[in-house]
Length: 520
Image 1 (cartoon, rainbow, N blue to C red):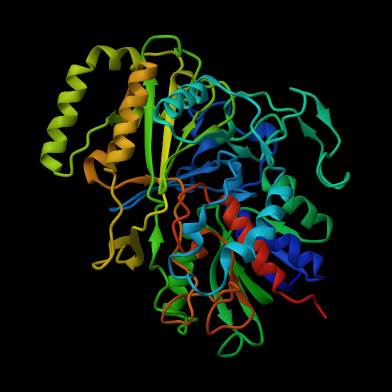
Image 2 (image 1 turned 60 degrees about the horizontal axis):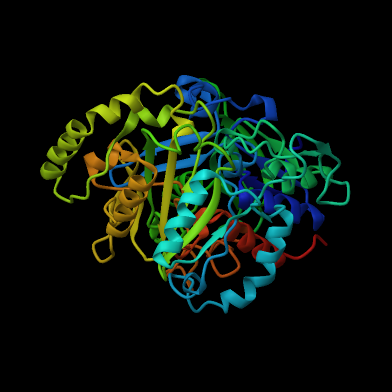
């Protein structure tokens, strides 16, 4: 490693990987610092029961790709590792509908839908997007319901190399400059890490190509401080970092002319909040505000009998999507054979805002469904018997991330709608879907205890705005009031997309990177 770089990128997810490649192409010397480990295909766990390889809990020496974070108002599922969320996400690359581009704090800053269209196309190409060619059992059941309800249904556009099952070929995407790829096994285990070299994760496209151009990647390290040289960082920055996988680690310092924050909401926002109190006091007061859950609802539907018994893990992680109305989408999600960890933290679905009534209704449901639940509890393969429904809306609801006495915490905004675990449309659909496939609908027990939702797509906290009274970054992703400092990750998303956001993060990052000049 050198002591000086043109840019240090903090995080290697969709925004960080795009930044690494595009800055390297422009002639800049780049270092990517990633707190997670670097994985090869055979490093991933076979099931999510292998907690040391699946979960990211460094205090317990668990160095996997899935991070669970529990706050008072929301439970967050996020990704960690070289490649960020691409290692654990479900491959889907939907483009949001028009409302996404016309509300939130970025509304009116530009003609976003038209300006971003070519960058969405570019992102699809770079991520190897293709239409899912396989209709698995859970997809067929969703299509049947869509037809009965008269709702639009379509297979997902996904970042997977299908090819011929199990056959390895030379790079099919980048004229031979990329790595070899292998045809998808359709095992459904995308979200525990693809062990067959079929998932187009960021380490196989953006990061792979960036490294060929000289970009360096430093895994298992975490940035803890940034010190500007000059009031606005006009002379560069000193970055302080340390090991993220050791209990005891000395800090090290390194210099850069520019900084790119790409650690996701749970990486970027806490660091910005800390820096606002110390070395970057001119950051906007909007840091940590306008954090969105994508208005999500996650329901696990576990089959107890019938024609779908033992078949739910077939296919890819998310194979189809149904549009319920102008605001809402629903997808069927699956894990691979043997992945039954979630069975430990599930309770029956109950639509009841009052805590005490909710508690008694959950107990009642557990009693009346006891025979079926016992069969599910002792099933040999929870993963192959469970179909997850992911419900999303682009309607607004927000929380705030802020520094508390014991670390990061959430707070509700008085004048804004709060996220909730009880979305009637989602719960009613989940019950109808479960009845069709002869399953019991369940949710995480944290939702029944707190009444707040779980989300795999936390967004916002460093949103765009016209000035520092409205946002943290400008329309080109530059941090307001500081020089050569940018945010490219989920924290920049300034409205609820209502669909999986990975493609939008990639496209907006491509757009923002196009605004940075080549190195002189």
